[in-house]
Length: 375
Image (cartoon, rainbow, N blue to C red; front, side, top):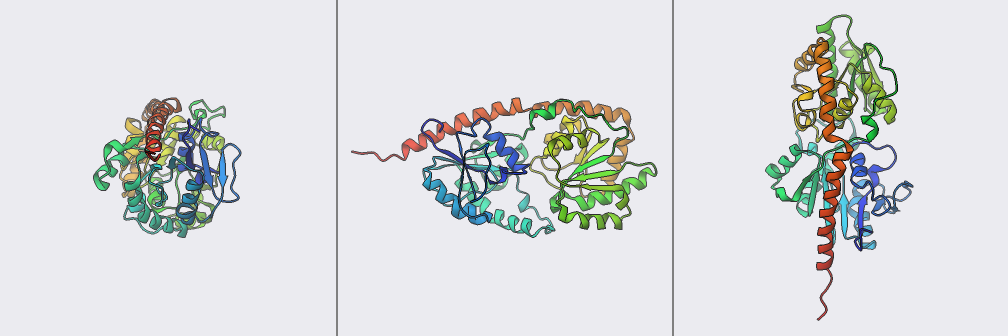
């Protein structure tokens, strides 16, 4: 395993239906799936990975109790903690590589509709500051989050490696499905307060007032099914319930179809560590309007148009103004396809390759230093 080194990682959020952090982990370990050792809870499995399944399913107990035991039992030299947090009890010789996607859980946001998300926010607040101190190497997905670490957490810049998110190569090939004339507005969102969906629905209602008839329908993907009714009730209160469609989890080919046939993609988040949906929209040739906040300016670059995510009026007017300008829509589509090339998997994978070359070298030195000297 990487010569004589034993490299392991927490595989749990990359099993089954995964996006976001699980997708990033899969990119990091690509080519090492049968070499690196993935740890998961008892009963979990994935035949594409080399897994050891043992321990608690409840995540805090899994991370703080089960993982240290597995790391010790399997004599791990380098451990990759890919989901913002990490085990706090690790042998001194183990090189800890921590992946920090964002610091959203420290933002002064309202409570989520999800009790699980609220608990997760408290857990991260307790663990992340200590994990940042313990980590030997920190990977993050944007320069925005890198600056947060340096300025707010005092992390040494030389300890940080920025590796952006990417997409699977299939996103960069034209979709074979015919494009729908006229299209619709498309959002990928969620129930968390940081996703700003309630304000976005109100902004969509205002957009319809500004446009009059006809105006485009809105399709929203990414919200868990159990939260659909609450957002539908909100849409009803602002008079747009008949014009919004909430979609369940969809596989990649159907998501590509949705992006490709949208007249406009909107990402209204208050804060994002990266913003993968912006990449997906640009790769699909769909014009993007997004929040003027956090990492989204970095990801969308000059290809997107931006709004104040706290202003219903600004969101609505930005949507209206872009959709009313066919020449601008075409220009944004072309600029988006150019912008997203910088995140192509061929480019990002080379950064990942150099990263592992450096990390495994450090782990080798640590493993040698941990061998007792016999006089």
